[in-house]
Image (cartoon, rainbow, N blue to C red; front, side):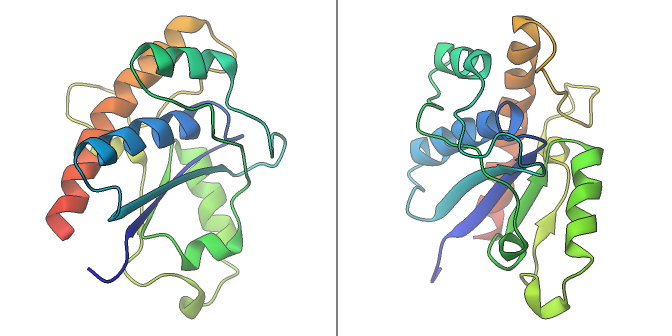
Length: 166
């Protein structure tokens, strides 16, 4: 492959779900020895938290399972992302709608050919009933643990999907 596969995780503010997915998937990629073949990033559809670190509860939950989020900083989805990433993976239908809304103003030449835009949990095993990663921001610590369970499952499926395409 002449360039890395590029993966972008997307949630609302880029401080809970998408940075958690970013950190989990980054570790999965490194553990698989594919760090030079797969690039990982995350962003939010909203710009409220640009430049901020992930939520402390997300960081703590991730760290308890061996994932590091400390170096991540929130950023907002840009038009340029559509021409750069191979996978754009929103956490829920609302963010999927925001992604499609932003992309609707682009021409086909502005969007990466063969780009995969689908709900991240579509890669998860059938062990969960959810199709969306719930936003844990207004809940308790257990919500962050559940989000990690969902993300770990989907990360395994995503990595298998990417490897099958390589």
